Image (cartoon, rainbow, N blue to C red; front, side, top):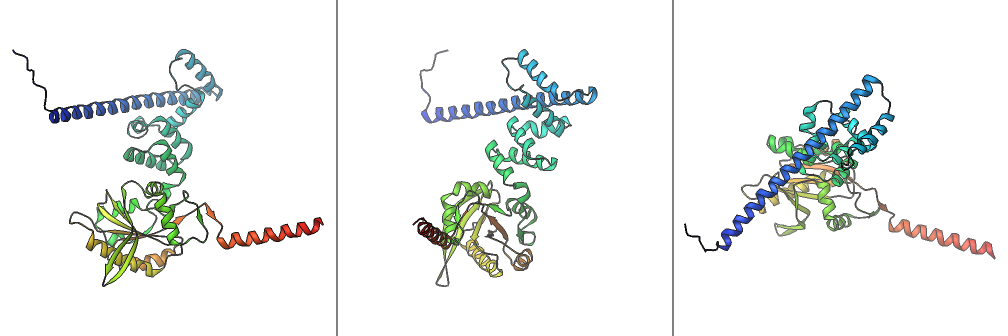
Length: 346
């Protein structure tokens, strides 16, 4: 058979090459996951054996150090047999006594992620939740640690909402899951007398951190979204789109306490966004009012008879700078004290 001297069409060859790359990368990921599962299963088995021996024969904690030294001597090229890691193996086996849990949970995430969860989370249900979230969203260890330290498990689904009677059941349940209370703005340093515009400016400047706090699925559309109704201009603080909910999300920021009239304004904004931005395939727009404090009963009454889905949640800061008045007062006090010291030195 004669050999063909034709070179492939560039577009056809490029598509062929890209397809091969996808297959290779997919195989690499599967191989890495398989190795990870086997390693973690081995660690679980070692931890289970240590627990069993200690319980059956009364071995003390010193055996862990001896075991680490012997294993490192036998397997000098294999890392992971330090005393600290053996203690993690024992804790891991104690946390998940059934092998099926290792396959379904711990074996699906990297070992260092498991160690972080063992260190920081003591409740079994909460541990399982963080593992499931890590599997679903592919959290890095640093993001996992941030979410644990911010108390994400306790904050999820705690806001006051009217979702149960403004959204269909599947959408309502998912919307509840993406709303937190309170929202943690520790990544901001803001003055004590800051106004809403200052908070909005700071959040836009730290949008990456804000999106991380909002959670997976939020996509920033624009700030200061302007709408003209009846010849009058109104302005929405922030407009987002949620990729899983398939809807726009309006966020209004408040530096004070929640007031009933804010729910009416939000209801108006949601109707306007639905009319101007929502496409036929989109779900109803959702509103989130983020305020400094809220009375739960007032918030529930305010949302009860509204037709648009709205949530009311609080925001928290840990890094609050003194106000301009406080700084000026402290400066005056320091000046007076300095003057008195100079008088006494004469």
